[in-house]
Image 1 (cartoon, rainbow, N blue to C red):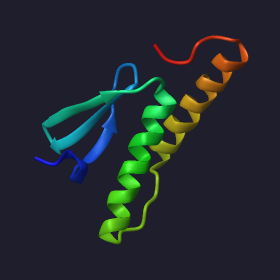
Image 2: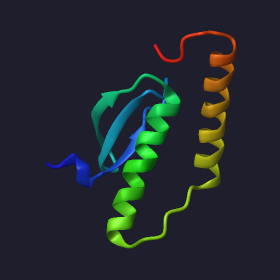
Image 3: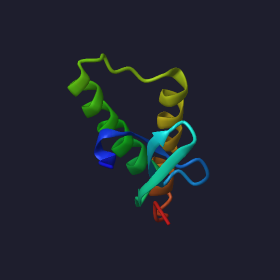
Length: 87
């Protein structure tokens, strides 16, 4: 199966893993990224490309937008404090 043709999602616990959504009950690990923000951006970009190919308008749900803003805030705060962002 070509997982590039599936929608992707971010992992639920740490937020750095990326999964291909194969079916409503089955996801396949694509990889682990350096930070939750990078994972969220990667998933969003991949899913936007799928939507554009289908000709469907792309919009974030309020929950997705809130999650993205929270991850950005955490990442920026860690950088400001001089902490490593990621594992």
